[in-house]
Length: 305
Ligand code: NDP
Image (cartoon, rainbow, N blue to C red; front, side, top):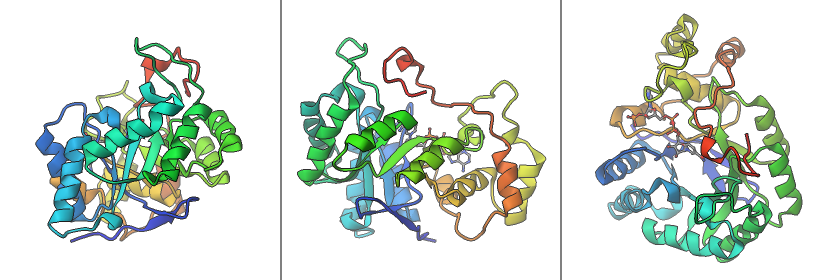
């Protein structure tokens, strides 16, 4: 069954489907990316999340274009996101970097271009210490040129987001950061909403994901009976409960899967509603654990965590 996914209105006036397909994999074949995206679009995903740093834009673009060519979707039905990497934060590097991404994706525009991190990296891998306000001017240029319909940020903390919004001519429509039941992020989520910045959850499955190794015995979320009971009550999996918990907090989610059954599973979220008590139970798994601490940047001036 093809799922129809609701959309959220962005401050740019464009609309973003509230469930997107993540595409990051530490290791995958070109065919897995391509096939994952094709299965995603067949299942009903209309929002695809990639990044130049994932080194997969060519294959993600092939999947997208295959599904446009075979008539499953039109380009304007899709919402495609890619991200600017940290070594291209100079204002003059932003548009060329997006053009490179578009060439790899074989698309004329992206729906959303994100500053992947507030930190910038120089040619030696050290801190380039470029102000993200400078980077943002390049992002605004991308909108003016019609290369990106909307622009936003990722991994920005409250201070960084507030400073950016004060200076920006075109506001960031979203902040994509890690949110899941073991990293609930209430403060930053509320802050984003106050500023009309849509919170987008990456790694939304957190420690529930089979890919995450055991974590100091703190991953009770995989076995806890209360969560099992909630899942059983609705005929859903723990992963679906985690995603629904985020959606009910008005957070967009971009779960990644290249497994056909899970791609479909992660979209089957619109035929049940968690009660307030159930939301509180899921919320209670918070241990403020980051799956993506980005330790490589921890000594950089703009490290956000
Ligand atoms: P997720 O929380 O989406 O988990 C993905 C992992 O969980 C995969 O190994 C997948 O395996 C497995 N999985 C998927 N669905 C299920 C399910 N229903 N039950 C059990 N296991 C499942 O983590 P990600 O880190 O991939 O985050 C999602 C996306 O967010 C990324 O792909 C990327 O697009 C984006 N992201 C952005 C970042 C940023 O800095 N802006 C940082 C990290 C991620 P399998 O594929 O084998 O099914």
